[in-house]
Length: 333
Image 1 (cartoon, rainbow, N blue to C red):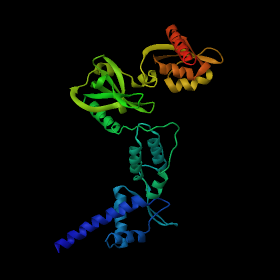
Image 2 (image 1 turned 180 degrees about the vertical axis):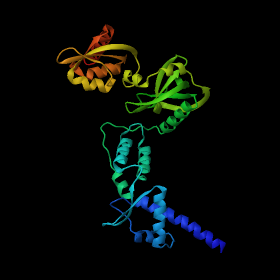
Image 3 (image 1 turned 60 degrees about the vertical axis):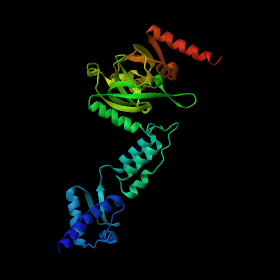
């Protein structure tokens, strides 16, 4: 008899879990389940249940925090009225996963499948949509997820990391930099720039802040040695650093004055932030003084803006820009 009581208790626990699973997976306001539907589902799972006991289960699930409503008009029945994520929020997350270049195709499909589990089956079908993005190639490096996790671990444990770093050859092969020698860096932050993850860290050998693309790291491991560069990063401004580094390419930092046409106000604010100072020069133009790392990527950004912007100072940056343009012209002679 004791065995029968334990069996009934086990079935009762299973019954309420099955009711919860069925409601979470299959219902929304447009697709409720009737009491008959729930009884039939339980019967298919070998559980005989009365309406009264299922009413009780639904009340227990409500007390547990699941928002279950009873819809009276057709189609009538019980459904989960609200979830942790609303459908538009899930669609936004799915779009972000599909559009993000550093997430591999395989991992994108896995993440989207997990996101579908946060919606009803009918809503999940709406998440299976293709977002087309021009020139968006997915990375092939599956290790990026584990690299990010290890870097976060190193930061939280105040530890250095060591890794090898690769670059691509013309033959489209991965080649390790520095002939495979390991880099030992003190990681202080992770940032996402130009659709890539970067680790910002302190290099004790050169005693400067450097950044590394996470998807180009191999054999990354957390070391038992403590991080260095604490005093430097105590006053480090990551937002300012990201504004100065164009496309995460370094260069000599310089204060540059630009004269721009008024139509570029939004471009300058987007690039350097709303706090950037704009000074009217004429009715049609304004000047802005910013600190940037002078690099080919910075000059490329300027060139894309055409005759709407002009470097006013310093002279050496103007001459460098002119020399770069002359070098490009030589390629087309």
